[in-house]
Length: 614
Image (cartoon, rainbow, N blue to C red; front, side, top):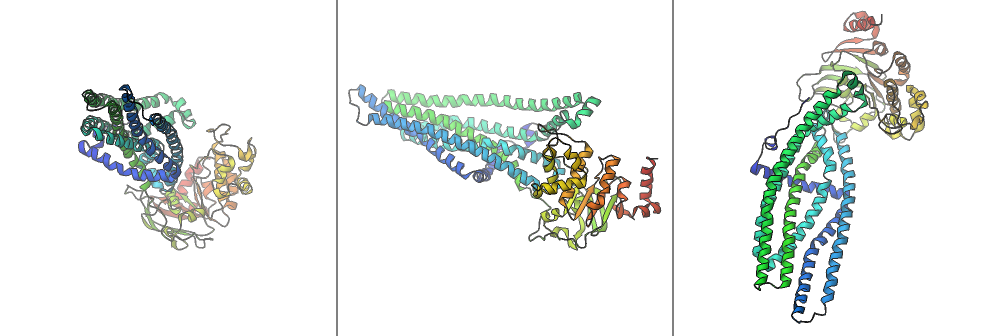
């Protein structure tokens, strides 16, 4: 396992004007972000916006009042009396300063609450959208990179929210101070702008390079996450110790992380030198205007109040101009990152409902029919299923037999409509499966996979995932556990049905593979669906536990259709019909006794397995 990341310029394949153009185009992501913020909390967006607008006006107001105060004090030194409103001016200046402080606290409060509400809102939306996408998406490494970036950005864009508020305040402050400078000396503004623009250009350039580098490092960082899991999980702990893999995995982690660290440091070092030089020009520009104002005051063009106002306005405008450009650069950087989050939301499932989709039939009268079905996984040309046709009628139990990779699980994915056929049709009661409502169809299908989920929740909630709307129905959950054989196991736990399973959380109790599987089987009983699919349902059970499960098999499938996948012939012989798959085709069908007597592929496989027990 290794990962390499090209330089930002090489990775992006863009530079110069194209890089700037991309950053400007990325600003189109801001309106969708603002919409998301508004949806998350309209009240906090309104409060934050109003408070920052008022804060932006405070500096000019205080400088204007200060100018009047300084001129009155200067007049006093020339034996002129203070005007009657002098002390009121001091009170007003204090009032504006106090208002700015209070409004600052208000904006901080609104930012904090908005960030929390936005994080919750966007995280929920990412989860919901991810769950709506096709299974095929989760089998695509590129999608995983996009999903990972979307998950990270759901949280990391909190900085963007604060920066947008800061930019609004900084722009208002800068514009008001610039207006004051232009009123007294328009030429000074040109010097300030000329000194600040190079710094802005440098910050923007390196912000783009940082994005390009981070984007290119996504696959490598995913590998680091995987190595972290391998190096510190209970699933891998045994083999790590027995096979001495810790040093290998740690070495791989160090190699990839060292490369990422070196690339980050190189970019930071370049930024330090370039932006350091550019900041010198910015400082020089400020002090040039400062010197000009002092000189003009000395020769009598400005009075002492003008000096106070201009020095304050120039200082504030200089700082705010740099801050505006810096904040804008940061927002442009964040906007590029937002592309991944917004692109993720644009990904639509290929398998989805048609307008006016039909409800699933209750009860199912004719069953399912595969009619000349062929299927190839996306981005491949190899047909996993080839012109496959068969029927699964109501009350019928069919077992699928074949070596790995022959298409058994693919049939399960198609009949549950996790995928649609490449060619042909799958019919339910004579109607194409694509005409039915997806959620409604799913309610009529219960599936227990070999790689079923082990939810680190209470035993009750683990079973309830089979039909989550029955989560609070303790009687039905208990009845499902009794039918699967999990009830006695659960009763032996300290917390019984409220016992947390798994070791992730404090007080949790782990189960053996077979015990977990009885929990998974309970879900199938709770679901009480019209079609039951068991994909290697007894793979983790010992012989006795397997026998107990299939003693209940008839009860579980009474009045239902059942599709069973298993490598154990003791299991499949209980089916009404056995279909043998090879190279995506059905090569044999019949009952266990019929297929054994035929002496074909099934008989050969049965004899091979039976011989291991002799």
